Length: 379
Image (cartoon, rainbow, N blue to C red; front, side, top):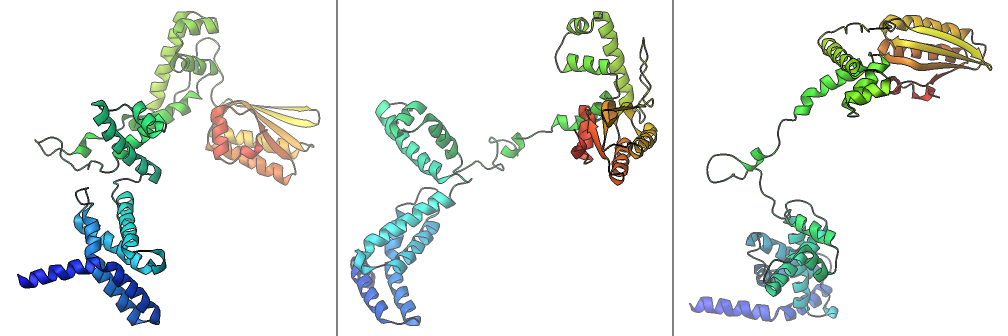
């Protein structure tokens, strides 16, 4: 017992004389040259002040961090205080207390949050928590966001952001159990299969097939399913009967279903004046004002690509002008073979020192040409 009593007395005496020990350390440290002697003096002062750092660390226990971690952080702050100590600037214990406390607070700010939150919101979260406790005591109820904003002299948006950020300090684990019964975890309650993913292929297929339809049928489908027009509104727009619109919609949807189920889409059969078949591509050449304009109408696919390529190359070679304009306003569909025909025509024009330009492509054709790198040819 007497040994324990002597030890406690010696420890208390060391704490009381910490400032004197620091002054002595600073004087002896200045006398020593660089080397092990300085390190030994530094270690002695740190060892002497360890109980002081531990006492500061214990002030913050019970706040969600293990005491061992807090003591390690406090000791790190103590080492920094010893290394930066200047006896001319005042008491060592005062300086060490500020340094160690700041290190502990920095640890809580930077290391204990479950998710990254800006420092401004971290500080505001603490202020909101303190203001909430004070206002709850004064009002005998939970304060509103407006009352917190008035108390802290900030905006309600900042208060809401701080309240939301507070949940990031200790976020719930996705592996945490849900309820007392069963092995279900919190992560099992989030997420589900995205049903829209299964329809991606169908959407891409339909978007390509739509451009194989006549312009009238495409517009009717757009008005009905994208513009939410009624059949009567569509009939008034086109000057036909509502029954005729119903038949057109039914026949168009039937053709789309059949086309999606086959590798080769069936030919569109129209009532009344039949449109040109898909492979009936026409190429017209118009020379005016020293410029050659080539108009293409129809679907520029594999069956028509070679004929269009030959026609464009012939026009380019015999142009006799500096520019050839290819009008694609009448082309509703283009595939890889059609794009290759335009690329070959562009190469032939480059060799002939003729500038080939593309005008008025429809949206689907325009997107395909942009992907193929032909956007610089657009007028």
